[in-house]
Amino acid sequence: MLQQFIQRPVLSFVIAILITLLGVLSLMVLPISQYPDVVPPTVQVTAVYPGASAEVVQKTVAVPLEEQINGVDNMMYMTSQCANDGSCVITVYFEVGTDPDMATVNTQNRAQRAFNVLPAEVKQGGVITMKRNPSILMLYPLTSTDTAYNFEFLSNYAEINIINVLKRINGVGDVSLLGGDNYSMRIWLNPERMAGLSITTDDVSNAIRDQNLEAAAGAIGKNPAAPGQELSYIIRAEGRLKTVDEFSNIIIKTKSDGSIVRMDDIARVELGLMTYDVRTRFNQKPAPFIAVYQAPGSNATQVRADCNATLEELASHFPPGLEYEVGLDTVEFVDASIEEVLKTLLEAFILVFIVVFVFLQDWRATLIPAVTVPVSLIGALAAFSLFGFSINMLTLFALVLAIGIVVDDAIVVLEAVQEKIDEKGMSPL
Image 1 (tube, rainbow, N blue to C red):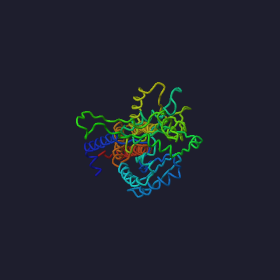
Image 2: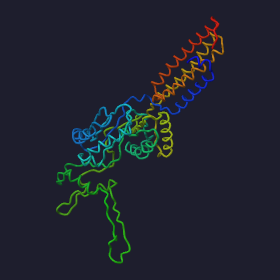
Image 3: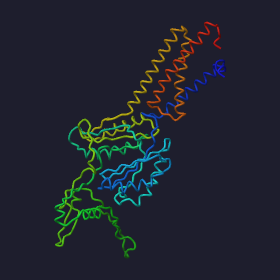
Image 4: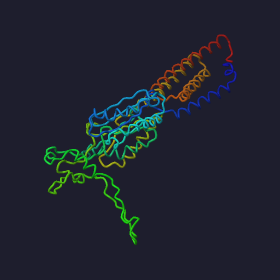
């Protein structure tokens, strides 16, 4: 069989060219990541029970969801984390190779079964199910060059104007805000004033719930109408309250003498963040972090470039004094690995040429490793694609080892062939 390749050099050249083309095509589509895809796919189920302790959240939210999610297809195990801010995060781990999209759909269907037994506050906020890559690809801190913008403004600006744009980039699995949160109307109750007016926290909650809602106000003049009625009007209510003054004017109670107790009589109302549990800083300045997670099977280098280009475009519309920086770039490790592989490959070529030409004194023998080494290494990329590998730090390390093996074999084979030709007078064919 091997004799056929020696006696038919054209066939050997054609096969070498095909291997090289397959390797080049594979290089164009191979995903790039820091580590190989050996981590089990994960799906996160998130719910929030405002005002509840971790123990209450565990009993009323985590347990019902876990009972329904347990046993979903290809599931290995799951973990849950409940915090005193009312949050519940259930992470479901699936077998390696499971389609993350199907795992998300199956988990969502299981979580919906527990929806009816969840508290009303949790239902109102919703139960969010999403696939999540556990490793962060990029971190972008959003900072203010002066004191013009506080932490609350930076968090809200990132949530509204940046995160939604980054989520639309191809290859981005998820984008989240670390250390910040959405704007929220915070009501600080005065227990002494409430006790003096015989008002409970339930009275305050009910008043907010009844007066802060979107109502269908109806219409005037719609059919059936009186004869001759030609005009009709759609009634538009103001809807949900938006400002501090509007919340301060919520009516809590009407006393027997006809006087009205409003929200600002028993509480201080202000606009702030939903939670203050985590505050982040960058270079000693308050800064929320925008975390970008890579989608499975995507090209980390391309995702990084697209995110940087998108943020560069968005930065041109930032308010004066607002800027972003690159706080963490995990792709740098992959870039450094690729650079070292190329450097090793170049050094190997030079050493092979020198060794072969100096010791064999034959330029034709020198051309053989010049052709075989690139074909072997580029062809290895086709094997990457065939076996579902990605370009990562481990496969690049394997490629460096392959360079040494191929170079050593090329030199040994050439020396053995040249020795038989020179000493024994054998023909190359």
